[in-house]
Image: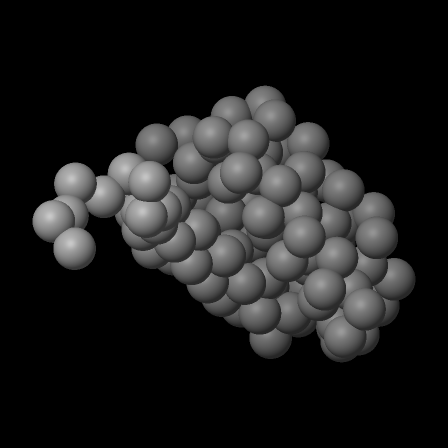
Length: 99
């Protein structure tokens, strides 16, 4: 699945916030997580391979370690969101239990 324009805009935001593309700081990692969380919470989905391909071809991400870290973060956030989105909490009022 190709990346949507909204996802590409967010990937450009990541490129803008990272000062040293050879070494991500912890605050940058937190911001990147937040960006990917915003993407999935808005209902957007992305293919991890497409994220990796985008960063490889963007031009300014020469260090593979940083690209791999971002791809791993994108995968982690999307997987985490999908897992928690499937959970449903039932309140006592919704339960048809005979207790």
